Amino acid sequence: MRLLLFFLLIAAILVLIARFVPKGKTISLYAVLIVIAVIMLLPFYMMFIMSTHSTAEIFSFPPYVTFGDKLIQNFKSMNESVNFLRSFRNSCIVTFGNVALVLFFCSIGGYAFSVYNFPGREPLFAILLATMMIPSTAGIIPWYIMMSKFSWVNTFRALIIPNCANAFGIYWFRQYCKNNVPTTLIEAARLDGCSEWTIFFRVIAPILLPAYASLGIMQFVNVWNDFMQPMMILKSPNVQTLPLMLRSMVSDRGTDYGAMMLASTCAVLPILIAFLSASKYFMSGLTAGAVKE
Amino acid sequence: MSFKETWKKYKVAYVYIAPFYILFAIFGLFPIVYGFFLSFFRWDGLSAMHFVGLTNYINVFKDPLFWTALKNTLVIGIIAHIPILLGGLALAFILNSKLVHGENIFKTIYFMPMVTSSVAISIVFQQMFGNNYGVINWFETLLGGDKINWLGGDGSLIKAAVIVMFAWKWVGWNMVIYLAGMQGISNDIYEAAEIDGATQPQVMFRICIPLLKPIIIFTMVQSTIGMFNLFTEPFMLTNQNWQGGINNGGLTLMIYLLNKAPQGGNLYGYASSVAYIITLMIVAISTAINKASQDKSDPDYIQSEAEKRQRREQRKQAKQQRRA
Image 1 (cartoon, one colour):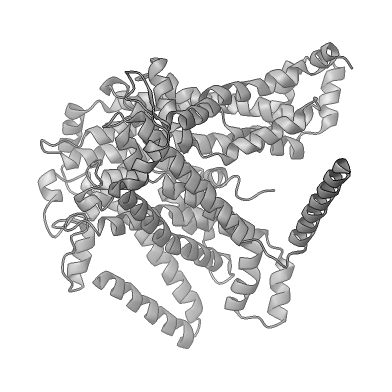
Image 2 (image 1 turned 120 degrees about the vertical axis):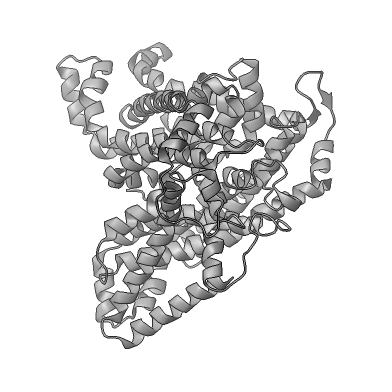
């Protein structure tokens, strides 16, 4: 509880600085931002640190807070206990398979809702919006029973196909089409003799690229990091995704924490690097739906 | 236009939207309906099903473990919302003020937890919260305090650890959303406030928060759903214990549900009724948040209420006429 007191003390000092020191307001605001940034980064830093230490070193007190020299040893131990590349490949199959299908179905669906004025459009769209209100928790048990009746347990299908019914994605593409696809463009393409299918793929899809990027990133992050559904479905070690592989490294007969930290680092790094290099798109993708245009 | 002509003209549109409705009917709607049906039966997944009426629901409410799980979930969710909402708003306000630069760097850092796998991060937090080796206890002893047994002891501090993790993860997401909302507010309003001599707290409480209300409501509903679905963090922090660690300190509703079926037990009917209770709570709380936040003096609200009243009266009159 001294930690809480410490933070309160810091806060009090910052308030005093803001009040009495010239330019103090800016200084204390920066201090707040930097302190919180350090707290946010601490777990990542500790993850990198611990992946370079042996289990005995991790369990020592005071803890090591600088890089150690057991990286290679941990790497060997990790390869002995789990097959990292196989899990990485499995994660890729599930994620890319699902993202590709979701983007395809949602874009054609949203496009149809925004462009064609077919009978029954309004009621169908109202149904679509209503499905977003129902929490998926209600059907989780029957969903699992269905998967086992289809004998889809231990297959990637079970994670790829059911999650393709994405009402939010269709809504998202409909809004984007409404704002960005001019009707004249479609009419011009029709006059030139394009079939409806060609119009969509040749003319419309390129316009929708930003919408593909946002929704794709959102779906990618969710599926890549998902733990609960894969845990229920993927039971055999051959089909483990990365979160399941990490989980399987915890064992009653002595867990090698150094190797586990290294595996966590390897699992987190790819997506972290992708995020850092395109953070703007990630943030707009993952907060899509909150800020309506 | 005949049915055939309509079909011919709009075939493409129907084909384009069909996949969603087919997939949703099979994998979304059917499980939800079937779950409701199943919650009135006793079934172990293999033998014949027995109709038991409301027994499952009654048994859930009689189970002390269910109440522990519900209490834990609510405690974690409600306490964690204080730093998430207030911290998110405060950080967004600081970054939006003209006093600081480097908005993008801070935004990126605060958002990092959202893209990382909860399993990996939970493993790291488990080490950081360790009693005899964790970094957090090390800081505590550096400041002259005693070591705190976060994940052990009588289990009550497991919730505190989960709250820290939950807040750590979501504060950045909320902040980015609030910041986008604040930047959407027209600059004229801020300038007008400045000319009128408003102080920064006044700008925050009188301008930003009222204008951001729809966005704040959205994030609250989202995190309510997140709260009831809380599973990975407590599960991993307690060494994958299906009882939620010592004294069920970290048992959440989702762990309780999945432990009944299909992980651990095979009480499919019972688990379905738990799932339905959770769903009803999510729906009830989201509706309550939406209702409670309605501004009675808002012109749009007054108009929609008036319209509703008018329609009700019309219906009443129509009924009377029919009777007469």
